[in-house]
Length: 320
Image 1: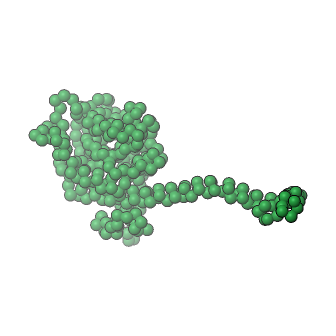
Image 2 (image 1 turned 135 degrees about the vertical axis):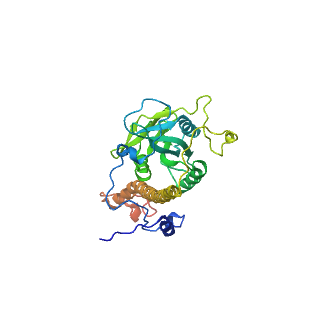
Image 3 (image 1 turned 90 degrees about the vertical axis):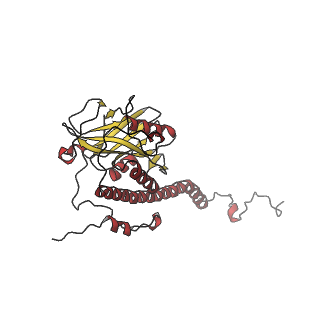
Protein backbone atom coordinates (compact mmCIF):
# COMPACT_ATOMS: atom_id res chain seq x y z
CA UNK A 1 0.00 0.00 0.00
CA UNK A 2 1.51 3.30 -1.07
CA UNK A 3 1.45 6.40 1.13
CA UNK A 4 1.41 10.05 0.13
CA UNK A 5 4.83 11.72 0.41
CA UNK A 6 4.81 14.83 2.58
CA UNK A 7 6.38 17.89 1.06
CA UNK A 8 9.57 19.29 2.53
CA UNK A 9 9.66 22.77 4.12
CA UNK A 10 11.38 24.08 0.97
CA UNK A 11 8.60 22.70 -1.24
CA UNK A 12 5.98 24.28 1.01
CA UNK A 13 7.75 27.63 0.84
CA UNK A 14 7.80 27.41 -2.96
CA UNK A 15 4.07 26.61 -2.92
CA UNK A 16 3.37 29.78 -0.97
CA UNK A 17 5.63 32.77 -1.68
CA UNK A 18 3.23 35.72 -1.57
CA UNK A 19 2.94 38.07 1.42
CA UNK A 20 -0.53 39.17 0.32
CA UNK A 21 -3.61 37.56 1.86
CA UNK A 22 -5.52 38.04 -1.38
CA UNK A 23 -2.95 35.94 -3.23
CA UNK A 24 -3.07 32.96 -0.90
CA UNK A 25 -3.66 29.69 -2.74
CA UNK A 26 -6.95 27.93 -2.18
CA UNK A 27 -5.26 24.89 -0.69
CA UNK A 28 -1.99 25.08 1.22
CA UNK A 29 -0.43 21.97 2.71
CA UNK A 30 0.93 23.16 6.05
CA UNK A 31 0.46 20.05 8.14
CA UNK A 32 3.01 17.37 8.90
CA UNK A 33 0.51 15.42 10.98
CA UNK A 34 -0.08 11.78 10.09
CA UNK A 35 -3.27 10.71 8.40
CA UNK A 36 -4.55 9.20 11.62
CA UNK A 37 -6.12 11.47 14.22
CA UNK A 38 -3.62 12.58 16.83
CA UNK A 39 -4.49 12.23 20.51
CA UNK A 40 -5.56 15.31 22.43
CA UNK A 41 -2.59 17.21 23.88
CA UNK A 42 -1.89 16.28 27.48
CA UNK A 43 1.17 17.22 29.50
CA UNK A 44 0.65 14.07 31.51
CA UNK A 45 1.54 12.00 28.45
CA UNK A 46 5.14 13.26 28.41
CA UNK A 47 7.73 10.63 29.26
CA UNK A 48 10.96 11.31 31.14
CA UNK A 49 12.76 9.19 28.54
CA UNK A 50 12.13 11.81 25.87
CA UNK A 51 13.79 14.74 27.67
CA UNK A 52 17.27 15.41 29.07
CA UNK A 53 17.94 15.08 32.78
CA UNK A 54 18.50 18.35 34.63
CA UNK A 55 18.07 19.07 38.30
CA UNK A 56 15.22 21.40 39.18
CA UNK A 57 16.55 24.90 39.92
CA UNK A 58 15.87 26.49 43.33
CA UNK A 59 12.22 27.56 43.23
CA UNK A 60 9.49 28.94 45.43
CA UNK A 61 6.64 26.47 45.84
CA UNK A 62 6.29 22.72 46.17
CA UNK A 63 7.26 20.31 43.41
CA UNK A 64 4.35 18.11 42.38
CA UNK A 65 4.63 14.50 41.23
CA UNK A 66 3.65 15.32 37.64
CA UNK A 67 4.57 17.68 34.80
CA UNK A 68 5.04 21.19 36.14
CA UNK A 69 6.13 24.60 34.85
CA UNK A 70 9.03 26.64 36.23
CA UNK A 71 9.18 30.32 35.26
CA UNK A 72 12.05 32.64 35.95
CA UNK A 73 11.14 35.69 38.03
CA UNK A 74 12.78 37.93 35.41
CA UNK A 75 10.38 36.55 32.77
CA UNK A 76 7.36 37.19 35.00
CA UNK A 77 8.60 40.73 35.62
CA UNK A 78 9.03 41.42 31.92
CA UNK A 79 5.54 40.14 31.08
CA UNK A 80 4.06 42.34 33.80
CA UNK A 81 5.99 45.36 32.54
CA UNK A 82 4.80 44.72 28.99
CA UNK A 83 1.17 44.50 30.15
CA UNK A 84 1.49 47.69 32.22
CA UNK A 85 2.97 49.57 29.28
CA UNK A 86 -0.38 49.32 27.45
CA UNK A 87 -3.07 48.91 30.12
CA UNK A 88 -5.93 49.87 27.77
CA UNK A 89 -5.43 47.08 25.21
CA UNK A 90 -4.34 43.47 25.17
CA UNK A 91 -0.70 42.74 24.41
CA UNK A 92 0.97 39.47 23.48
CA UNK A 93 4.30 37.73 23.21
CA UNK A 94 5.93 34.32 23.33
CA UNK A 95 7.73 32.37 26.03
CA UNK A 96 10.94 30.46 25.43
CA UNK A 97 12.60 27.61 27.27
CA UNK A 98 13.15 23.87 27.21
CA UNK A 99 11.66 20.70 28.64
CA UNK A 100 13.72 18.64 31.08
CA UNK A 101 13.09 15.99 33.70
CA UNK A 102 14.30 15.51 37.22
CA UNK A 103 13.93 12.48 39.45
CA UNK A 104 10.18 13.14 39.74
CA UNK A 105 8.72 13.96 36.32
CA UNK A 106 9.22 16.15 33.25
CA UNK A 107 9.07 19.89 33.78
CA UNK A 108 9.06 22.97 31.55
CA UNK A 109 11.70 25.60 32.33
CA UNK A 110 10.74 29.03 30.91
CA UNK A 111 13.85 31.18 30.69
CA UNK A 112 12.99 34.00 28.30
CA UNK A 113 10.25 36.01 26.63
CA UNK A 114 9.84 38.07 23.47
CA UNK A 115 7.34 40.88 23.17
CA UNK A 116 5.11 40.66 20.12
CA UNK A 117 5.18 43.78 17.96
CA UNK A 118 2.74 44.63 15.13
CA UNK A 119 0.05 42.54 16.86
CA UNK A 120 -3.56 42.95 15.75
CA UNK A 121 -6.36 43.96 18.08
CA UNK A 122 -9.86 43.19 16.81
CA UNK A 123 -12.88 43.60 19.05
CA UNK A 124 -10.70 43.69 22.16
CA UNK A 125 -8.89 40.45 21.27
CA UNK A 126 -5.18 40.42 20.49
CA UNK A 127 -3.95 38.35 17.54
CA UNK A 128 -0.56 37.43 16.13
CA UNK A 129 -0.02 38.81 12.63
CA UNK A 130 2.46 37.59 10.01
CA UNK A 131 4.63 40.62 10.79
CA UNK A 132 4.54 39.67 14.49
CA UNK A 133 5.75 36.14 13.79
CA UNK A 134 8.51 37.42 11.52
CA UNK A 135 9.74 39.77 14.26
CA UNK A 136 9.53 37.00 16.87
CA UNK A 137 11.53 34.61 14.71
CA UNK A 138 14.27 37.17 14.14
CA UNK A 139 14.48 38.06 17.83
CA UNK A 140 14.50 34.40 18.88
CA UNK A 141 17.33 33.55 16.46
CA UNK A 142 19.35 36.51 17.71
CA UNK A 143 18.67 36.49 21.44
CA UNK A 144 17.74 32.90 22.33
CA UNK A 145 19.29 30.52 19.74
CA UNK A 146 19.39 27.68 22.28
CA UNK A 147 15.74 27.90 23.36
CA UNK A 148 12.46 26.94 21.73
CA UNK A 149 9.03 28.57 21.78
CA UNK A 150 7.18 26.83 24.62
CA UNK A 151 4.07 28.99 24.86
CA UNK A 152 2.63 32.46 24.63
CA UNK A 153 1.38 35.18 26.92
CA UNK A 154 -1.16 37.97 26.68
CA UNK A 155 -2.91 40.43 28.95
CA UNK A 156 -6.51 40.79 30.11
CA UNK A 157 -6.71 44.37 31.42
CA UNK A 158 -9.36 44.26 34.19
CA UNK A 159 -10.90 41.12 32.57
CA UNK A 160 -9.56 38.51 35.00
CA UNK A 161 -7.78 35.25 34.29
CA UNK A 162 -9.39 32.96 31.71
CA UNK A 163 -9.06 31.95 28.06
CA UNK A 164 -11.61 33.49 25.71
CA UNK A 165 -12.85 31.79 22.55
CA UNK A 166 -10.18 33.62 20.52
CA UNK A 167 -7.53 32.65 23.09
CA UNK A 168 -8.58 29.01 22.85
CA UNK A 169 -8.43 29.22 19.06
CA UNK A 170 -4.84 30.50 19.23
CA UNK A 171 -3.88 27.88 21.81
CA UNK A 172 -5.43 24.98 19.87
CA UNK A 173 -4.05 25.99 16.48
CA UNK A 174 -0.63 27.46 17.26
CA UNK A 175 0.43 26.05 20.65
CA UNK A 176 -1.06 22.56 20.58
CA UNK A 177 1.96 20.54 21.70
CA UNK A 178 1.55 18.86 25.11
CA UNK A 179 4.28 20.98 26.72
CA UNK A 180 3.17 24.35 25.30
CA UNK A 181 1.38 26.66 27.71
CA UNK A 182 -0.59 29.91 27.87
CA UNK A 183 0.16 32.65 30.40
CA UNK A 184 -2.44 35.34 31.17
CA UNK A 185 -1.77 38.55 33.08
CA UNK A 186 -4.29 41.11 34.34
CA UNK A 187 -2.23 44.26 35.07
CA UNK A 188 -5.20 46.15 36.52
CA UNK A 189 -6.41 43.40 38.86
CA UNK A 190 -2.81 42.30 39.53
CA UNK A 191 -3.68 38.70 38.70
CA UNK A 192 -1.95 36.06 36.61
CA UNK A 193 -2.48 32.46 35.64
CA UNK A 194 -0.83 29.72 33.62
CA UNK A 195 -2.70 27.13 31.54
CA UNK A 196 -1.34 23.62 30.89
CA UNK A 197 -2.75 21.03 28.50
CA UNK A 198 -4.70 18.34 30.38
CA UNK A 199 -6.75 15.83 28.34
CA UNK A 200 -7.08 18.26 25.45
CA UNK A 201 -8.20 21.20 27.61
CA UNK A 202 -6.00 24.09 28.82
CA UNK A 203 -6.15 23.87 32.61
CA UNK A 204 -5.26 26.69 35.03
CA UNK A 205 -2.47 25.35 37.26
CA UNK A 206 -0.03 26.55 39.88
CA UNK A 207 3.52 27.10 38.65
CA UNK A 208 6.91 27.40 40.31
CA UNK A 209 9.05 30.56 40.19
CA UNK A 210 12.82 30.54 39.97
CA UNK A 211 14.16 33.64 41.66
CA UNK A 212 16.92 34.70 39.29
CA UNK A 213 16.68 38.34 40.43
CA UNK A 214 17.97 37.79 43.97
CA UNK A 215 20.84 40.05 45.11
CA UNK A 216 24.13 38.78 43.75
CA UNK A 217 22.51 36.43 41.23
CA UNK A 218 24.25 36.34 37.85
CA UNK A 219 21.70 36.06 35.06
CA UNK A 220 22.55 35.68 31.34
CA UNK A 221 21.36 38.74 29.42
CA UNK A 222 20.54 39.15 25.72
CA UNK A 223 23.26 40.75 23.62
CA UNK A 224 21.01 43.76 22.99
CA UNK A 225 20.92 44.56 26.72
CA UNK A 226 23.47 47.31 27.51
CA UNK A 227 24.06 45.69 30.90
CA UNK A 228 25.41 42.60 29.16
CA UNK A 229 28.75 44.23 28.44
CA UNK A 230 31.33 42.60 30.64
CA UNK A 231 28.75 40.58 32.59
CA UNK A 232 29.59 36.95 32.00
CA UNK A 233 26.84 34.56 33.10
CA UNK A 234 27.68 31.85 35.57
CA UNK A 235 24.59 29.73 34.88
CA UNK A 236 25.40 26.86 32.56
CA UNK A 237 23.63 27.05 29.21
CA UNK A 238 22.35 24.06 27.22
CA UNK A 239 24.22 23.25 24.04
CA UNK A 240 23.32 25.27 20.98
CA UNK A 241 20.45 24.01 18.91
CA UNK A 242 21.31 21.75 16.02
CA UNK A 243 20.57 22.53 12.38
CA UNK A 244 17.65 20.10 12.50
CA UNK A 245 16.16 21.95 15.49
CA UNK A 246 16.50 25.28 13.68
CA UNK A 247 14.79 23.80 10.62
CA UNK A 248 11.89 22.59 12.76
CA UNK A 249 11.61 26.03 14.36
CA UNK A 250 11.55 27.77 10.97
CA UNK A 251 8.96 25.29 9.75
CA UNK A 252 6.75 26.03 12.76
CA UNK A 253 7.01 29.78 12.13
CA UNK A 254 6.07 29.24 8.49
CA UNK A 255 3.01 27.21 9.47
CA UNK A 256 1.95 29.78 12.06
CA UNK A 257 2.31 32.64 9.56
CA UNK A 258 0.02 30.96 7.04
CA UNK A 259 -2.54 30.17 9.74
CA UNK A 260 -2.46 33.79 10.96
CA UNK A 261 -3.03 35.10 7.45
CA UNK A 262 -5.97 32.77 6.97
CA UNK A 263 -7.41 33.80 10.34
CA UNK A 264 -7.12 37.50 9.44
CA UNK A 265 -8.82 36.82 6.10
CA UNK A 266 -11.64 34.98 7.87
CA UNK A 267 -12.04 37.79 10.40
CA UNK A 268 -12.38 40.38 7.64
CA UNK A 269 -15.11 38.28 6.03
CA UNK A 270 -16.96 38.00 9.34
CA UNK A 271 -16.74 41.77 9.89
CA UNK A 272 -18.15 42.45 6.40
CA UNK A 273 -21.08 40.08 6.94
CA UNK A 274 -21.71 41.59 10.37
CA UNK A 275 -21.67 45.12 8.91
CA UNK A 276 -24.16 44.17 6.21
CA UNK A 277 -26.44 42.55 8.81
CA UNK A 278 -26.40 45.69 10.96
CA UNK A 279 -27.11 47.87 7.93
CA UNK A 280 -30.05 45.65 6.98
CA UNK A 281 -31.41 45.86 10.53
CA UNK A 282 -31.32 49.66 10.37
CA UNK A 283 -32.83 50.01 6.89
CA UNK A 284 -35.45 47.26 7.02
CA UNK A 285 -37.92 49.05 9.40
CA UNK A 286 -38.00 52.08 7.07
CA UNK A 287 -38.54 49.88 4.03
CA UNK A 288 -41.31 47.97 5.81
CA UNK A 289 -43.02 51.21 6.86
CA UNK A 290 -42.95 52.52 3.30
CA UNK A 291 -44.46 49.32 1.93
CA UNK A 292 -47.18 49.30 4.60
CA UNK A 293 -48.11 52.95 3.92
CA UNK A 294 -48.37 52.45 0.15
CA UNK A 295 -50.60 49.38 0.50
CA UNK A 296 -52.94 50.76 3.20
CA UNK A 297 -56.57 51.24 1.85
CA UNK A 298 -57.99 54.79 1.89
CA UNK A 299 -60.97 55.66 4.11
CA UNK A 300 -64.10 57.31 2.56
CA UNK A 301 -63.39 60.97 1.93
CA UNK A 302 -59.66 60.54 2.49
CA UNK A 303 -57.14 61.71 -0.03
CA UNK A 304 -53.98 60.24 -1.33
CA UNK A 305 -51.62 63.17 -1.88
CA UNK A 306 -48.96 60.92 -3.32
CA UNK A 307 -51.35 60.01 -6.14
CA UNK A 308 -52.41 63.61 -6.79
CA UNK A 309 -55.98 63.11 -5.46
CA UNK A 310 -57.87 65.97 -3.82
CA UNK A 311 -60.78 65.51 -1.41
CA UNK A 312 -64.10 67.41 -1.52
CA UNK A 313 -63.16 69.59 1.45
CA UNK A 314 -59.83 70.63 0.03
CA UNK A 315 -59.58 74.25 -0.94
CA UNK A 316 -58.49 74.79 -4.51
CA UNK A 317 -58.71 77.80 -6.85
CA UNK A 318 -61.80 76.19 -8.51
CA UNK A 319 -64.02 75.88 -5.42
CA UNK A 320 -63.24 79.10 -3.61
